[in-house]
Image (cartoon, rainbow, N blue to C red; front, side):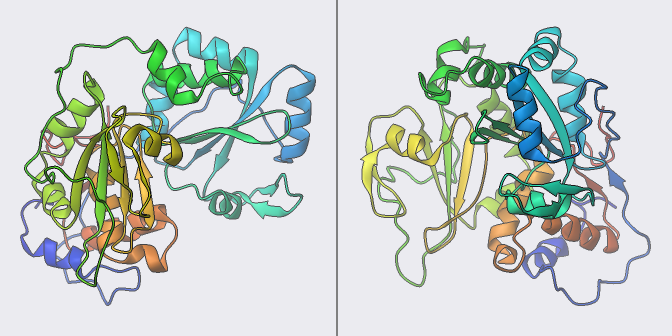
Length: 358
């Protein structure tokens, strides 16, 4: 039995909450596919997690600090290590210009934050509102967060982040402009890919009245291979499309100068709103609830399970009770498996559920 083979699953997910009733009886526990064990490089700093001391030591050595938030079984963390950190230029830049410290979002090691407060890895991750792994926080010499990468990003984009922070460009160029100036267009269509669920000519994004629906804003751009992957290999999934259908969906060119009215009622050009939101990459998707408040966003190379999960996180109402998207996903996974269905956290829409992470 697979996740596609039970129509009643949609009803299960619609009723899903983190405090759900007893799970439905199932002939077997569904199989969990896609988890990976990650071995982090030996050159990561073996830190006592006293962050001010870490930043002071890095400054003395002419470096800056990166906190890399991880968790066990995370295929995106494995991809970051195996596909990104194995590249000579990325490894050399990290070793030369940064101290990299791994933090397990479910860990119990003590962390002394920059505020002097004592946390566990788990509570510190929650305080930093870490929703995805891997997430990277880049700090300057004063402990200010210069950049945040939420989720896995391809090697070229990680290298851009390292060069921007490591080269101390934060007072010269906005990160999104730095990335745009150095990215060489790859083979892709010259137009943004259209979907039948996108609203036409949507210029007023305010949520009005009791019948207002949640809003999904897709920030994209032309000549965007990662956008093509999103549309052809993720949004092609029927269950994901069913979840998206519960939203008002708007596609915007993140570089457009056309005016819109934001969910907060401000009139501005799309590119100015993108800058205000801090969206750095295309595709970037930001979800707002029916009151126009942002709930969750991502600019990462996610596959079907996590993409579907983010839409479900909002429409189920779980975000009101459970601030941790990762806890929501864990509970959702168990719910599905208890119903006898298989879960694959690493598949694209054109791959079988039983496929495992490479």
